[in-house]
Length: 474
Image 1 (cartoon, rainbow, N blue to C red):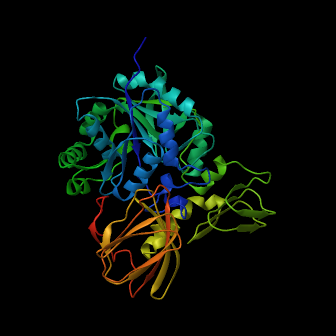
Image 2: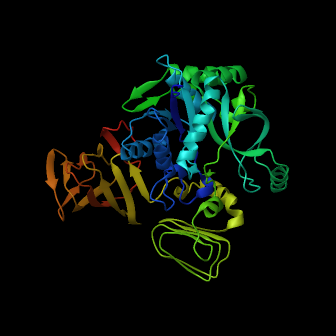
Image 3: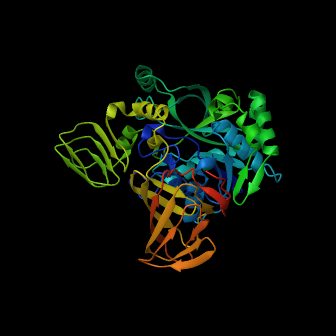
């Protein structure tokens, strides 16, 4: 009986999900968002890899700005994992090179199951079986891509042209970039094309060999960044300058379109990359009027709409084929057929430096979260939630004072030279320039209302004097 192959899941957490704004933001992209299913796409990916028989802990590669979202999800899933931090986004080829170098450190050479963190798969068992069918080919040195039988002439996906059979898989004739509608329809009618899922299976050494063969400068640059790596807690950090000097390149361009080792294996597991609101509509559960509804929604005489309300009642009357998404600080209204164009809205927000493209009113931190409730001239009100046992940095502010009111839980407050405990309905005052810290010493979440007052209330008015999470001043 053949031994079970050693397969290490490598979860790539890059991407900003601009077509799913306003729920997806730069600092909280779509893989960490809950679209109404009580679990984020990243959390569902973690659940999926746990179902692989004998699979070790995953290796996660993510943007430095998203590291605490990853750690919180790993903690909630009771998983331990190494996390490699990209100091700047450089696409999937450099990210996978870092993962391969990490896995080769101790002389091992496992198969890498490369998984984007922002895809949906309905049937985890079928997914695992597809991976195990492809494993013997990958063990023999093949670079395996997984292709999905197209159900429609989709213009948001790349395609793989399927060639002659090779074992349980097929040779790859070519990769096709995202086509226009006419070309996508022609390929669907002709047959022999698969959607490129972006999921791969290959040995760590094979990827490094193929990268060196087809993109030698990129491979050398990744090795240089890895030589300059450092570690703190669960994070592994490549050299910042060396990594930033790398060109941005995808796995497809750098290796898959050039290697002679490529095979494609069919994947029939209900895959979707959920790249747009229309994709969420097509994969969602529809009501008797054809609407996909999440949250507090009242739809009257409306059909075939995607309706998502996160913070308040969303009422829709007489709508057809519409996308309506409500968040605390932004609302999107668009025809479903133009859902791919939301990225143009995000581009305009970036040009005007609007904060709505970067983060939500609810901001997650390694210790918990804060949410802006009200703001005006010289004041701001926030709700702060601190996880049990967690603490904020020891800090001070040059321009603002703060009043803290405990709603529930217990707060340990450092206020200058004094350290005191405060419980429900008690409050304290932090003057401008006073060194302070907030800690939750209890077993339950600490909920606190913070009232800031002063001439400047920006988040960059924080001088961190000590921080258990290794954060710099921001």
